[in-house]
Length: 168
Image (cartoon, rainbow, N blue to C red):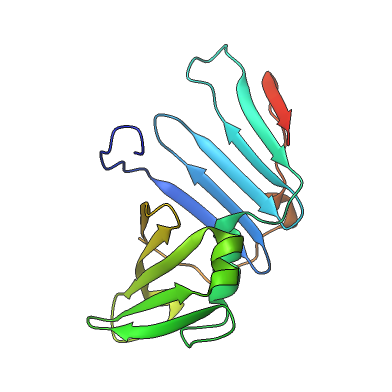
């Protein structure tokens, strides 16, 4: 946490579809859902108290950093116009984003670890993102499912009743 300086752990479910479609659900004490369909990003925080309103921020943008991060990774683990990549020991890669990409994502670099020598995104076990402000977010991947059907409505958010909506 940036407030306390202590490590914070949350159970998170991520659904991603190229290009730019992303759904993230944090199932913690504070439940949060972020949905991006490539044109609009919705960020919803459930209320702490059941009768209180939830809060929804709607942003007309396709610039949700995690969606863009996964879009860039579609280029693979070789250096390209967005980043340089180098192999690390113990089945890992260091991805260093080029200045223009850092500006767009707000992410300086990422470290990817794999479960085995099979360095395929189906075998990714951990992703550590290092942001411009030097904060780190570690995603520990329990399972990856690829080539599954994801309906378009999964990437649209329906506003629950009793929700304060903020348009940005």
